[in-house]
Image 1 (tube, helix red, strand yellow):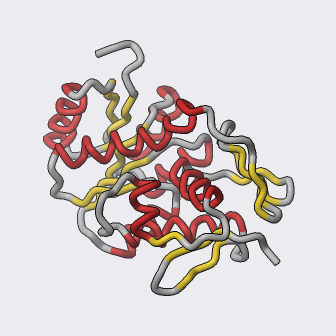
Image 2: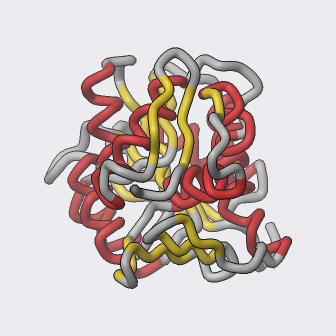
Image 3: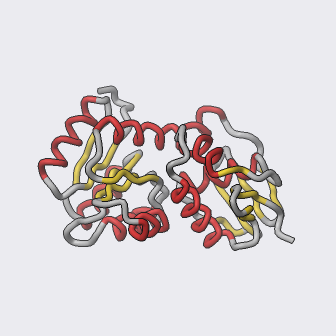
Length: 228
């Protein structure tokens, strides 16, 4: 493992699963820290500043949703949630509090590692390329280099994936992007199986930026347009 290995915080209260996942992530070259309950997870995230958190929803102390809320309130960090079932309500709530992706139990280690690497690529991509100059869309200003967003001069806190989704829409402002295109360009998903993920993140952006910037084209996708 190199000194600059990505740091992963694994939050899982089932010891067998935690050991298996931690061992696999270490074998894949990640630096792994672990926590087994909500309060410990928040403290480890604060102290260790991980590059990504793998977070189980069901935890003692307080659940993974509350962990995600508290962590994201302090600093943006990618979160991949582990859910016990593919329940749409749980999924939308999890994404709504700042999670970037999810994996449903039972999952394969190969899938988990692939999802982690995909999220990390999305976060690292702008830093590697420098990013374009800031762009304006109506009252919105997006600075890809600094990964900052302002509406009417007020900075808006976005999760890494929310920022990448907004940046993708901004690069293609005025054009309608299908959910499949957004999944490919933002999430690196080659298929269209994650349309709920796109919809949930659009809802989160509307809550934070206002309902007037992202237009829904029913049956097609979304478009970023200047507010009238």
